[in-house]
Image (cartoon, rainbow, N blue to C red):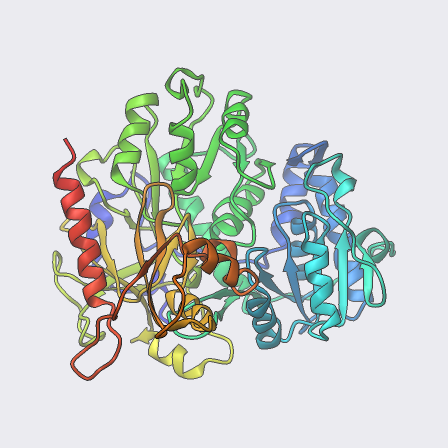
Length: 562
């Protein structure tokens, strides 16, 4: 793929860059786990993580990572191995993530929100035969079921109680094939670790299209570290953070690429302290800000919840120097409300799993660009290409598909050669996002080429929901689209045609049927029973009319807003 540092341009966004920052910068890359070694040398006694009752310094984090890497190597899980993580936010995540990478293995992220069928697909597709999890909630039991089904050979379970009492601690797995983290890592630290190269595969991060099951984006050590380098160049130029001096709130889930790279890897590579929580609670977040947090990146639903707290505008947010929103489109009115209430400028940008997820960021002090996702980050090149010919670059102001180049961009999808080829044009990744770039190089996304729904920062794929709904014996046809949701941004709505003679179906009944088939984030939030669903001229079910109805409803609601 073409590297951004050598791309000839043009660079219309250069005029919108902060002083001292070049759009054609080359991005440094490194083996991901080496960031822990460097930060241990430079910030050894500074806390790397604060989690419940534990404050873990960088020197202690390095020791934990090396012990984990040694354990993986002793178990034969070194170069070439694939290790799945089924973890919420807990210290076992950085231990296992960096430990596996230091051992030369590849991480496969599983989501605690995944349904059993999706978990089975990710394990089978990736070839991972080892899972690291913890006994938070029912995760250990959920993982034990995968072991019983023969989908994995080894289950390593971290004891949640190791970090202090918690209401989240659940039952522990046991039996053949199950090891506790404390026992698994009771090994001597290796005297030497494998050589890891930047082009080695670091992460299989599953993402979906709108067809079929999720596909694994192959992200190398170079992809992930190049993204961190792009963010760091931008952050220094914009004076958004200072190495070794920030206290960063981490509520976003580390199994998601946004939290993994944009928050954790960035923070740990520059000696910041991560204040980590397993679940988001607006009162807790506000208390942490008043306790000295200086940086907080969230998804729109988090900012909506914070702004809705009674008396929020009167609370002391003076410690907060940087706040951002990502993972889903941010309603313009939310950013305006936060600014009016607190004076804080809510920044954000654009990215996707396949770009690790660096892409574009919004510069400070540009209220004239309301609705933008920002300008391309240093070392990353973007243009807009025609929808009917992805090799034809459009002029500024013309609407087409966003294409991105850079060392942060995935090499493709695991076991999906044809889909990989179709996703690139002249070496640039076709993002599926439709938008335009203005004369100052600011990007505006106006639609998505695919039908994906982004609900509360999570990707939700309508066809997967439809496939699950079709298993209901009383349902003849179904279409699912995204509709406006005041809290999640978007939510799934199912339009259903029942079989002749079938009893009426309620939303609660449908959701009860889908339990175990879908994750909680995929559950429809609305259901409409219709005598017939719209079709194209050739008889195929069509979502176009439903989307047009939804757009008209939104327009009518907006026109009635004073």
